[in-house]
Length: 388
Image 1: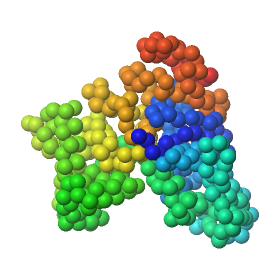
Image 2: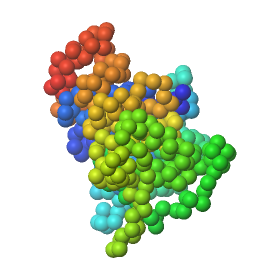
Image 3: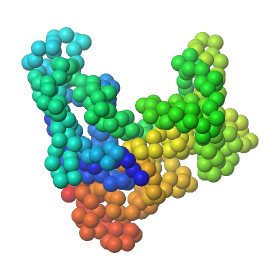
Image 4: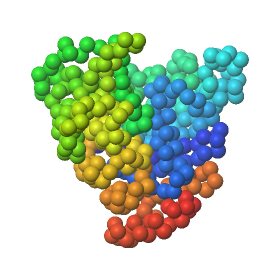
């Protein structure tokens, strides 16, 4: 059962004139379309809003307008907002001449609950100058470049929303290609030896899963604390690559730098291979398996061009059509993947100038059989040329 689900999303970047018309998600959503239509941008926009909600934004997000609807624990939420460059905000508290001042600020932010009868209950409503909560009371002034979700994350009405955004996970394989961790930044997890299935074990595992950290780092921690889970990952990995006999993090000595943990696999007849010498397909499969075990069960997993670097033997390992507790939003060009996923999960992405349009396969009256639907799909201008 999925307890967290993205329902719909729209987004405008006024700086670049890039607009995403409302996109509606399923428990499994496959975004397909020609190169350059905006599939990757959709995932990046979702990730940037996650960072904005959590207060972790490091890049500029000037002049945005967005609306995102999601369900958490049976409650339907709507988060809306608009931001502008700080140079456009003539408001006390922003010093446009100060190079350390924020690059953007909220001009509007609103969080609401949508009840089953479609009535909306406002949890907070923010303008350039005011912030009003559901009890009608105004709140203290906060920094304009901070989302109220992050600032008031401990409030009972806001905490579920903050927790929901922490569960959005972008599987960024290339960012984690060289997996090396300085030994001094890794706490001494070896002292933690919880009994499997004990209360302490389950609490520690839940805590690790909830951390907004790279999946490789979670795998490193699990290798110290949750050896049973790492053994399950190794077993599944061995089913795909039967010549790989072991996986480990090796502590490498360095005379000139700090000692570091390096991810390695052991290949029969070859020996230990470090992540930077590992095949892309092997490493991507290992990290994706780890993600399935070490992210919260009700995560929202974003994967761009899932098939990159993977052979058929790897792709077949992941049955996205099965009854999983997480929501998957994928992009792909690969005929095998598109054919593997039922067409009612396809979302066909096209664009008109700077406007991105996403439609269901049913909107194009594609064939009833998956094979016929795919043949019609590749002949659609919306798919092959990126224009509707």
